[in-house]
Amino acid sequence: MRLTRSKTFCAAVALSALALAGCTSIDQKTADTEKLSGPGANAGVLYDQLPQAIKDKGEIVFAGDSHPPYRTVGPDGKTLTGMDPDVQQALSGVLGIPVRTEITSGLPAMLSGMLAGRYDAFNGPVKATPDRLAQFDGVQWLTSRTSYLIPMNGGIDAENADALCGTRSAGVVGSITEEQVHKLSDWCAAKGQPGVEFVGLADTNATLLAVQSGRADSAALTQSGAIDTAAAQPNTWRTVAQTEEQGALADQLVLLTPKTNELGPVFYDAFKLLFEDGQYQELVKKWQLEDIAIPAPVLNPTPAA
Image (cartoon, rainbow, N blue to C red):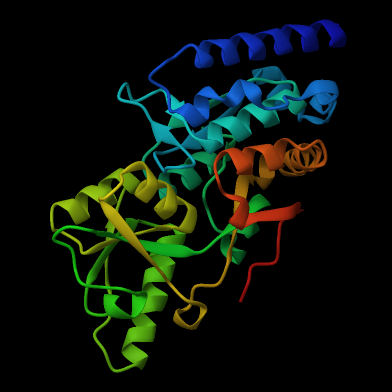
């Protein structure tokens, strides 16, 4: 029975990959997904470690919003492309169980939804903090800093983050970037300059629209998100990076899952397999995130001071 389940699951994964490869409208990075190594000999090897409640449900449900390059929600409001769907598919392969993402707006809703049992996990990008790790298990698989997108045409004249003092920066409410904007604002105040006003919005798309409409002067994104957005929209955006002096420590980005569902240690073992068999390295190369990759996953990392 176990062998039959694994074969059936792997066949479903293969069909799903073929279906994605046939969608000509999907970004070329996502269309290249089938070139990755796949779970291979590790297909379904961690299924027996899954909590019984997850086995009974027959799937793992992730919460997710639009946050390029991690996740981009298609025009239909359902189709997802990006690094996170790739990572979830790789995790699905070694766990031997399907995964599904429900589109949700805002980090607070995703965190409360997990605690209420509506979602089993959220793959960020979200920072490890003592408060979050008190309720959730977190598996670190990336790091990041904060960068700011500024329009090339008609935007403020800022060549570095110092020049953001006295301006407005849009970001996702409850995200890493909200905290980083406040740290930058504190740095400005310490220099005797006006602070940075944070304009909190629901997702990355809303932050970009806020800047384009003049509601904000810059969009605060994770470093990888800013690089990806600037590359996807040539001659539209330029980036300035927040420095360590301005409070931009390298944040520990984690996959979160409630401690009560006991999935954290299983996800940790799954990530270890992805690191060991080279899938992790292939994915970060595919999405050009090598500069924020880490050498090994960490379960419940000690948040940086």
